[in-house]
Length: 366
Image (cartoon, rainbow, N blue to C red; front, side, top):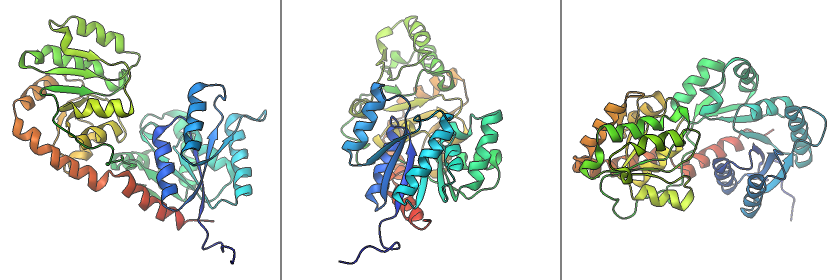
């Protein structure tokens, strides 16, 4: 049997990513399923950390080739990662490098000297960077053969901050076979899956429920996450006359999250800033009606055709009013399920979007 020629063998792709990032893992698996010979390069954050070891185990159990890099020399971490990446590329004769996501990973790709490379940018890589972090993103951004932004608004922000570059918007999307509706939700149930951090403003979510006295009309509120402002929200909820109507789950993932979303009618997020929110897509795909802050990252989903309510940032009174009206508009809640699910199927499918990206990467080998 003749050996594979360079043009006919599977393209070899190195993916630089964190071991503990579930979405990076999903992307790596989808690209491998679409015919790329994937090796995952994972920076050595802490080999003794349980989450790190669990992440490595998960990647290998999924059948991905994993190489831990960096940390094996006295060099600065980013330089050490870049050096190991270069050595790995030479040993594998890899055709392309993809970083998930930007920031220090993008800089490591640029420092490695590997060409071509591509960068998948998410919200925290672009929207929140300031000063030197923004400056150090410009070089890898402009030298990348392909920049991929997780959403249209994020792509526009990247152009404003980093300038010209080969940039395309592409949602990494969600697994629609998994995030699917089933059965009927609990009537009046409202869910918030955002972390208890200042940028997500869960305090306004809890305050809206109390000020509008939503439990009087049979509503309940479930908050699934944890974070630095959780106790503030608990204290606020303890002042409500019907404390049992507000539940704190203190961490909810995977099948548990799917169960909670399927049992909820309305999804709320009062984020002050965002990239393309994966939690929003999950909620829409399962059938929750979105009531979210009026920021560009959420506005683009209305532009795609989603039926949703956009609430002024920080306006707890308006949030309570919108939820109250929706709970009495059964027709709108019902009709939005099918309409919004169709939008996510069209533009937010991870299998479709990563198949497109795999084809694009195959055309850009060394």
